[in-house]
Image 1 (cartoon, rainbow, N blue to C red):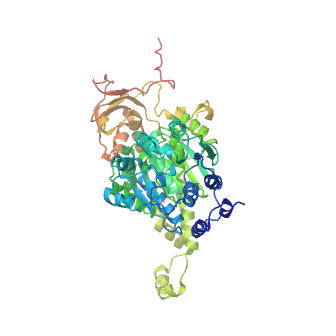
Image 2: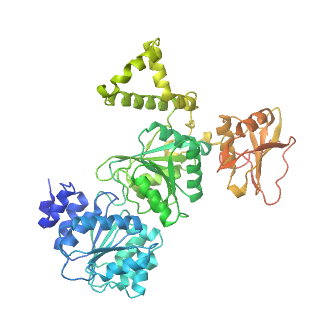
Image 3: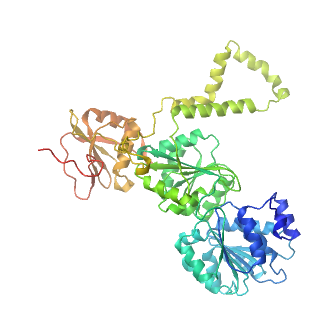
Length: 575
């Protein structure tokens, strides 16, 4: 087995490694460290987040620095302030025994003064975000003419975040005789362009397989009706009693909506999105790293570059638009050899994305069933009993109170006592899930996994004609202003009535309200069930506005008629 001693590192660095408790190098470290120590050739390292990339480039470059020279010799570029601060701390920790080593970090959203003083004090190692470093270059404060090592950490994410022009300017200003080390989880064309334009015949080191996720992350997906997605998320949280994870949404509005609904239902969760100030963002991340709350709901852009250890789960509430983002999200868990889980809630029309993700990962994602109410009750009961049986009992401390307890419980039989003790903490779970419906869509017999995930269960209405009792029109007090679409209206009705068998007709969406045709016999049930629920924080109201046939849509309204065949075409009328 290879050890750090076998890699050619000096004693000062080996002592620092040992102090951190590391004994054997990760695959990327075992290849990268001796290469950088013995070669001056540029190198690309393809490895997932959490595989030890910082030590892979920090240890060999620190060993080769001239500590008597007070100019910038090692520059590490990172996509975000949070990652930059983490990398800078680790580099300083690895170099704790190197006399004369000075480090500095520069990033946006903070005053220039302290950062300029650190640079002028003679830092040999600088960690920076591209935007702020470019500003310092333009002000003539940062000097990269003596640079020996340039590290691009998470280069794909830097390009995703729009730093292409900043990177071009920095790379042009850097000493052309430098050694460039590029690290990336994936190698999209834009990253390959940087490698070809600014690197000289780079050697490639791949940890694992190109563009694939880490092997210690379990990937599962859950088919779910659009209207049941939030209910399914709650069940995933409730069945995993010790979940510490990030829930990813596609938009900031989606993040706000999920956090609002979780908070309303008694879950502790913070939001991380682009509208937060830097101080708000720092506060959110400080609380999350401390595990309070244990759930963070975030957009891809806001979460890029986050460095949080020990995450147990990543939940894809929305699948990302870019498939490569799935790899970045999932890489937040299963780090440093630990196991993790990546769980995706998949709309019935998103089967093609699962196929593409599997191709990127190089492995199959396992389809799982949304937990039933009974599953959650069992899981919570087991967790409660584990706490009871594993708690440490201080007999001396509780002895003075035991007689009072005996007197209070006198007359209760063993069975009744057990029931009451369990019910103290178990009643809420029973109330929520005791009679909970199955949220798993029924598979259609003619649809296989290979053909995608969409099934006829996705059509939550009866397509054959009108019901005998006729149709009425109900008006909901949400419209385009709230971002509502026909699938959301259908989902609201299905979830609130706990039924997928209500016949629905034409849906007209206006700017401030939406009309939907409902079979007359079920109208009162729909109005009663929907009243008191909310959509994106707005309390819903429903009123009946007509009971005759469907009118044509008003000008400017978005219209949907669900009475279609599976292929999307209206059925031809019989003559």
